[in-house]
Image 1 (spheres, rainbow, N blue to C red):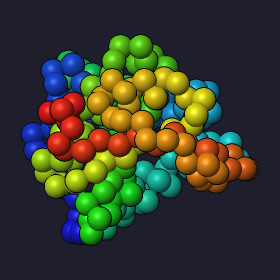
Image 2: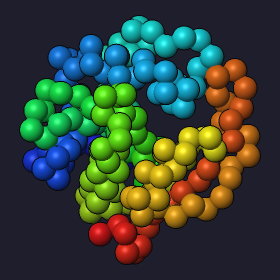
Image 3: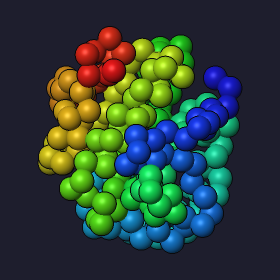
Image 4: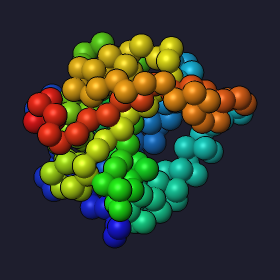
Length: 189
């Protein structure tokens, strides 16, 4: 797949906007992802998350994945104040030949409890189905991440089951709950 282009105009529902990450977002991105809850559920490494990890990913890995057509990451921001970062969301593990991709997200502590993640996931899923022609979106999370499971369900995803010992995670292996959404599902529109 060729490089992924950011939507123009940006994805928004009037409350949440998804836009490309900017260099000026660095401090908010690092502070938000450094939150203990993000680290518990989203940081797979056993070593502590540092600013260097973020700089390495934002400075090269993230853009390289976008240029290869494998993933695209967005800042979740306040639609009324697009400089205020609430979290991040992405479409990743894009398998064009299979018509499949995954969706992921995280929120800073100050942005939780307002439906921001659900709004972001809904925006991303519509874009993935309409613009990327994806036939199946997957969402996985840890079995103990009930908030993420609620976001998946509120976004219309169907729980399919448990992937045992699914991935390396924080020095061991983690099970993952698997959800999916198809463009033909009523909730996808």
